[in-house]
Length: 381
Ligand SMILES: [Mg+2]
Image (tube, rainbow, N blue to C red; front, top):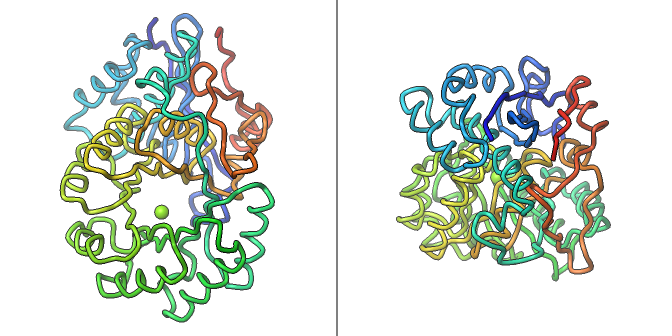
């Protein structure tokens, strides 16, 4: 079975929580792209790339000679060929983001053809359910309560609050947001805090980070994410050593090789690769296994789409070192693309699908609504 075609479906018109610059909200300048791979036997798979559709289109024009006619049933091998053949052509950038979408779609096809969930094909399932954390932007303390309690009512029992005013005004504001959030969810739910240090012109260094980490420890915060600029590995090593709360980062890194130093030098307690950026399931599974061998947990970064969440669920099922999965809420590109709404059980856990491939059906109307009327190709399997 060979790859015959790749179709791109641009997502536009919405952003989670309005969390992005609205200038990136048009089909010709958007942020997220669905990638559909079609085989010569009419089987289709779906992936997602965390980048603008015109960039993925440009990457496809470079990948084309190595893509069409390549095996659709050897996802890791085909992806590696794409990486190797484009080594001099934008590795770690658009090319890697585009391969991420293709790789996820290829694993979806492999699962459909073999009638197995991707997690089993990656080596086997360590778990049948996982705790999703409701991930949302920070706002004024009084509004945090409403946001968190709305997510609690949906069944979440872990919450990550991030960005917004945190670290961008003063220490008093930071603590007021965290205090109000802890009060809203009570002592038994998990609370994670994401400073969003990959924001442009992040103004803080180690001193702010360590002082803030000490404040967060008083509110029993599960981890402190992106407290520093994303490339400040020396700062992270120092922070991880001295922080009373676990340190998480690496959502902006691409290529598995970029993670080696962060893992080997123990720059983080929890590593956060994004399946729609790092090269897809093949690469993220390898990153997760390498992290596991260094006693670092993998927490997939999931600020993207329902297809990304579906891929993350398969990854965490196949990972010995996973305890959570990120679930943005509220998020139209997550909620509107699943055919059936996802529901947590009484423990706030999400069941991991064990059907073929990614294991989900997609909502045609939802996809049409966010892609300017496009439809997925009907698959023969
Ligand atoms: Mg983050």
